[in-house]
Image (cartoon, rainbow, N blue to C red; front, top):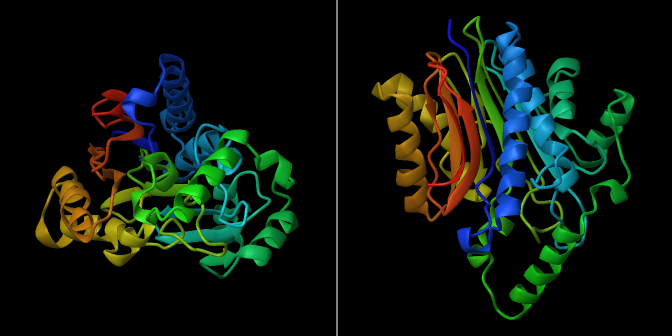
Length: 308
């Protein structure tokens, strides 16, 4: 059985003209490191679920990406993170929302899946559970980055001057990280983690912890999305890709393209997905300027890219 892994660091890229050569190299290095973290597990015969968890942890630890250490601020100046994991072999899943202290929310989401009878925990209950499970936690200063704080101030000023929420720069709208994998036993898994949208309302829940919207895995494919989460929820984006494989007989590339550049775009939503099917075929479509992404497909082809 072939192995495959695809990751994204969000569709919220800096505009090409604003990206310095040094910044580009830093982002590419972060993507390569996350890809290798997951790939090492798969190459040793490990589980897809372990591979996506490791890849996402790597991205959560990197302040360049909007998850964990690099999470953005809410309108009230808070960090409220979300994450989800789903095991395609069993369709067991767990997610968290409104997390403020777990350094790796993806591990907290996995703990919800493995150690509770529930699918989702949120806010204070999720933070308490992180401490109860002994997961690495941190105080707010760990999550503070000057870049994200300044982005909040700029976004608040833009909104105060009459700017529309949907017209925010891409790097303030679409920050999320995620991974999908196929392991040597044919098992699929997906994981997604995010700090949300810059200047989102306190308490907002996005698509990441909503299974079928921003995260999905079953016996046919695994999907992780990044973009304007409200639209991913409205069209059940991740599940729709799987449904197109099962009911319409589409291949993974056709299905993912139809959702991202078809139904999502038709609703006014922007973003992208990474998806892998049970044969190790990978799709990474997006409908905005760029998407931080990397993959090794079932044929062994490796790709790391930002723009088209």
